Each structure stands twice: as structure tokens, then as C-alpha cells.
Amino acid sequence: MKIKVLGTGCSKCISLERKLNELVKEHNIDVEIEKVSQLEEIMKYGIMMTPGLVINEKLVSFGSVPKDKQILKWIEEAK
Image (tube, rainbow, N blue to C red; front, side, top):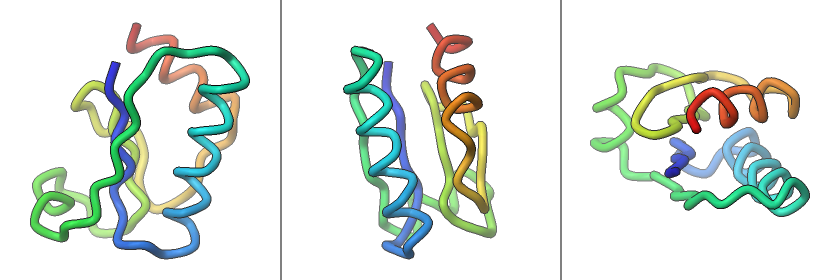
């Protein structure tokens, strides 16, 4: 499973990446987390606000930092 955090480095982007790392460690989830900061790459997902969250190439969230439960639900659905 591959998860991408889309963002150029704003506080929400950093918070989302930190939260993801904590969740996968805490729940022992085998994923690869990639930080995408190039604007050209971010624009390919059609978002206008960061952070964006992409799980297995499916955009699941953008513009906010989702709650832990919601992130875990998306990860579970993507398995």
C-alpha cells in the first residue's frame, strides 16, 4: 500500500504527515508514505488546497487534516 501526502510544507501538511507516521507505527500497518511537494505533481490530483491525502492513487482528502478514525477507515478500505 502506498500513501501520499500532497503539500508544499504548510503546517497542516506537516501535521498530516506526522499523524500518518504515528498511526502506521501505532497500528503496525505496512505502508509506504511518500511526501509530494512539487506543485506540478500536486496539481495532477486536481486539488486546490493542501494537504492532500492519496491512498493507492485514490484522492481521499484535501484541504484539512482528517481525524485518526477516518484515516484508519480509508486505509482499511484500501487493503
